[in-house]
Amino acid sequence: MQKFLFELNRDEDFQSRYLADRRAALAGFDLSDEEQRALSEPDIGLLFHIGVNGQILMHFAAFHSIEWQDYLQLMRDGLDAHGPVREGVYAVTGYEGVESHSARLTQIGELEEGDI
Amino acid sequence: MSLVFAGVCSHAPGIVGRADQADPAAKDRLYDAFADMRNRLEASEPDALIVVAAEHFANFFMNNMPSFAMGMADYYEGPIENPDWLGIQKTRIPGDKSLSERLIRKVMERSDVSYAEEWKFDHGIMVPLHFLTPSYKLPIIPANINCQGPPLAPLNRAWAFGQALREAADSVPERIALIGTGGISHWPATPDSGKINEEWDRRFLDEWSRCDKDAMLSYDDTQSYIDAGQGAFEIRTFMTISAATEGIEGTVHFYEPIPIFAVGCTIATINL
Image (cartoon, chains in turn blue, yellow):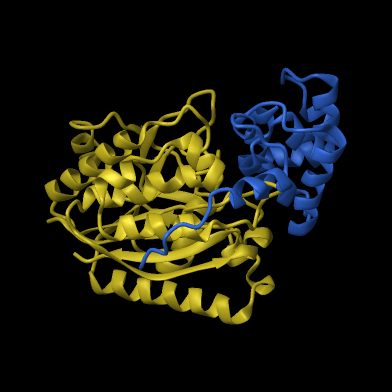
């Protein structure tokens, strides 16, 4: 799934073919029905939940002219709807969403102010 | 010749693409700092600029992921992103294949680096160039450290890469400038985008500015991810510059968290 997005993000000809026929552009990639649906709609929240790296997903969202704040909200909605990220870099230490990360940050405590 | 300039800067796409959404005063302070960095770079009269970046799956993917790579072409293209989204138009950026090859051969003596004769720049290189070499006249030598797809090379290998870059710069007659671009703490392109751990950033920048090798090499990716987000893996790019200028202190000219830019924006140079 990420391979498809990697190819799409960097290849303008591929982007044209995808825009002309999204489902057809998916041919040749090893994708489940869920993944094909997420990529063709596109369902940004589901893609993030499945485990697409944000750096890949961000470019894909920009390609679809999704505004930045909408992009962030779509990912949050995806976590709400589907649960924590299944696999990938965000699942390595458990990406449960914004609130859990905020809570973790508050546990770090006060660090000494470094002079810069 | 040797290094004539070394520094680090942020590269977040929002710095240009979402400039109109930021506090205007904060944006202006950052842009002024970039302009000052550009002046310092130009005053050093470089023949080429090595950009140590943490690209984001524009060229390198998990089917064939080098830990360290350098470009070896006479020109590059970028950005790969939607130009309207990034705020930077697609252009051709000059390289220097001969210089690249001589640098890469030298780097290979100490570090296992891959080379690439094709390279499409993403925001990780285009945003710094937009501010530092806006006329796209200075030849660029791109270098990449995998900071995105684990397993990542350990920090001490990034240090060795920086040392190798320095030896390579010392071995060629050209005047070489070197910058590292990346974030410190940040959660780019995720639902946590905009979160910045300023205390973590200031501690790292203090260590960076003192070239405190032991402190910088003591970071652990798992802990950094928890404390400072996956974007913190990009401290490798900053540390590479430290390694290339080991023993020399740096000056942080600008640091300010700007949430809409999704990073604590940083401009710093080594006191060469």
